[in-house]
Image (tube, rainbow, N blue to C red):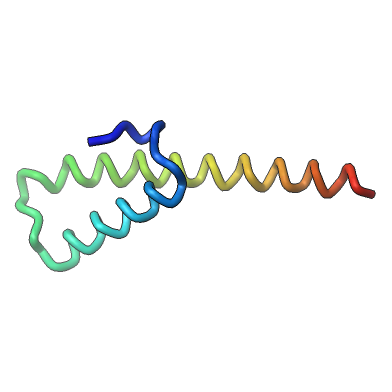
Length: 66
């Protein structure tokens, strides 16, 4: 499994979708559920961090144009 810090935003989002689909269709055994939930939480945190960083950078760029 690739470390979360090495994934692009798109890769992290796709993995989150995959985890969600597995949980929703109940193809995940109870023994793996905790592991996938931890991974999903890490992926969500990484995505939120990247979105916040991108928003900040875009605001700085746009502010510099004014």
